[in-house]
Image (cartoon, rainbow, N blue to C red; front, side, top):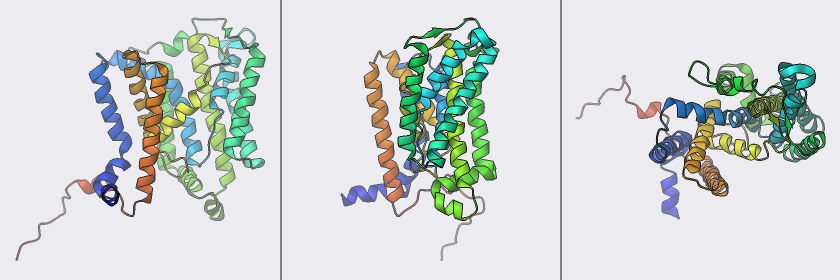
Length: 340
């Protein structure tokens, strides 16, 4: 046991744990290329990203919520309800107007969660579990538990069709969302305040940060991204279904945690979430190519998630720190000490 403890206290091992998403992504991509012929071709990568864009958008919103040390289990139900509104209102409002209403539904779902957590002071797990059940029941009530079809099936092609032989519009939306989140978290005062609130909400409030506003805004943002994901998925399939997104919440949380965001809040990044989404995309593509059943895919995802949480605990409890990437590079200003 002591020898194992010394291994995990080694700075080099801690460095691998700290940058684990890069290591796991590289290993996953190597295995995927070995098993899936043509995976490195641009068309195949474009299709894989298009399939992952819906999950990625949900994960973008959940990144902010988890950075606050909160959970949002209602994103799957929000996705389904937004998709039903987008498809069901096309006859009255047209495809564009109905899509805007779908986004509004996502925002309102986020406002509901923010009200429950911030105003009523209900634990985020309990609050979003309740809203998840309520919104899912509302989906079944509005559709009589049957999928609804859109008025214009060709309109959805604009969501999935590649632009100029590159990526699809929903892939661009996902990538732009990642870039904007990265810039916001890294280079703005509000982004630094968000990390402060996630690390210690009471201390952040005592220092003058309006913590409740950040928590409320995080849930609204999560509802918006889930709504956007629902709008694009429903347009792509020309269908609004009450069963859409039933597993997306847990999968998106797994992607965010794989990317290095702590469930306790205060640590994480947009680029880490991108890495986590790509890891799950590579795993899913490889296992589907090998005709592995879905429940085995869930076992693999769950095992990776548990391993990463365990490694995070080990790294957090270690008295030593990981090496930074810059410390591993030779310094230009270092001088060799002459021997006596």
